[in-house]
Length: 390
Image 1 (cartoon, rainbow, N blue to C red):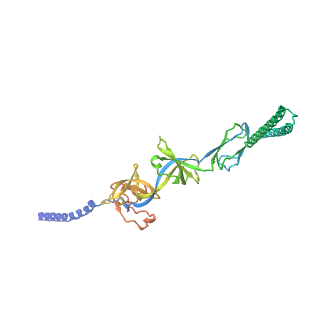
Image 2: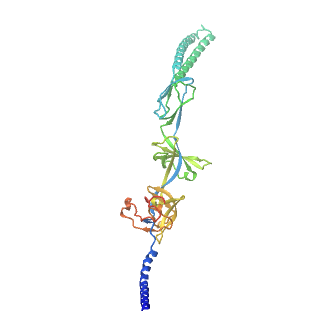
Image 3: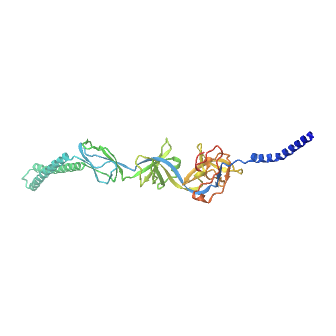
């Protein structure tokens, strides 16, 4: 009897175990077959054909178009007054400095008196010569005496001309006591010191003629042939805003050391630019077709540029590309199939082979709305924005 009960219990246990096994297997099956979670939800875009301006980048210095050296012509005079300083805008003929004119005025007065004396002597000699000519036919005066009167007349006239020339020279010396601006412009340097006694030729000021500046760009020899007078340029000085310019002349020679040639660019409105500043710039030399992507779709890693394609298994594949010109928030990509679709944003959080979920572009994407993203993988930090760095 007892053996029958034990046999019944064993049969019941075997039956219950057999019934539970399928349920246990069904509970374990989904866990083993669970799909991996996507790293991000992404949208895809294709490169867009665009017409971009072709530009030649260059570096160079900003300098004065022409600089005039303003000095003294008078010798040994004392500088009495200086009327301008660095940065002042001056006009042609404006008085920049004045020398003490006391000595020169005294010399002018002295030479004027000498001129008056020479005029009186010349008049007396002329009268004597005229009388001698009147007596020449009468024989009252010898030929030698008449010649003496005529010679005295010529000598007196020559002395008068010499004194008048000396008077003009002293008048010029008096004018040299005022230093005048040779042209319109801006004072760029001053070495004049009140009280200094200066020799002739000593520089007092430097003047940027007409206030004109130019950019002297160093351009590789291979690009010089594409530049012509009149070519437009955009120059950005250090810490400044872009300045428009126009090519004035291309230098006819190339530096044999650097293989660069100078291109002189006029800056009609220099703005914040100053002579001596370093500046970067670009020359606009036409336009050409290009494939562009938003900058958010291109990632720089280890000095190279990459985009991310999505394969048939929804995994991203890192693809190296070359980048070129920029236009606003778009960048030219070189070496990419125009029909390929790449991840639009969030590429900084992707690695080669990551699984993603492709979603349609939301209606607000055109107005700059962010692309929805899935939760980050375990062990990663949720991205703050789509343009971050991995």
